[in-house]
Image (cartoon, rainbow, N blue to C red; front, side, top):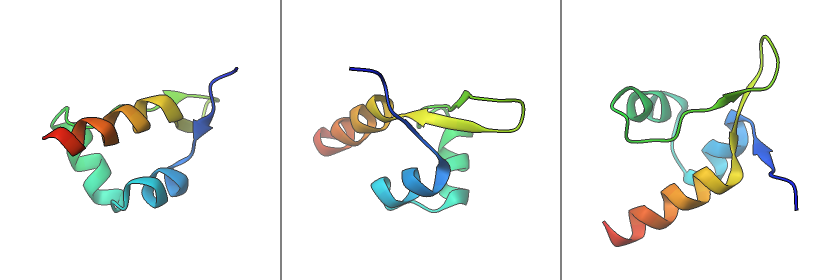
Length: 59
C-alpha cells in the first residue's frame, strides 16, 4: 500500500498541535521533518506522524 502524505493542516488536526508548536518541535528535533513534494510544497508521511503519536503515549 503506498504511503499517504499529510499536509500541515491535516498534521495539525491529527496531532492537535498548532503550526508554531510543530515547527518549534521540529527545530528541537522532537517532531518528524516533512518531505518535499514539489518546489513549494511539503508534507509529512502519515506513518511518521502515527509513529510519533505512538511514541508520545509511552512517554
